[in-house]
Image (tube, rainbow, N blue to C red; front, side, top):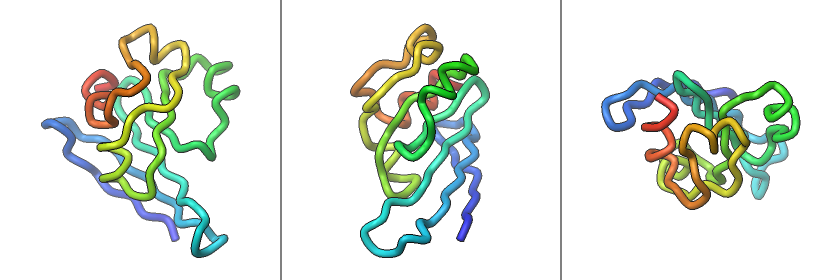
Length: 99
């Protein structure tokens, strides 16, 4: 099942996309939060490819949009780091930078 939702994060619109894992219980969902200047991705997505494309992105774990917004950044791609995203920031703080 694919779920999309427009999230209001500190007054900014963020497009949330969640793909529930077909693996069932115990398998994580795939989550992507798309902002104006970049995105937050889950560990399922390919960091090397995103880096090669010059994307401003970071990795945050979580099984729901709310968890991703509250959880800390685990990895930062170079373009996101250049514009101020840092390891340990919350997803909501990252959305402020990427919007």
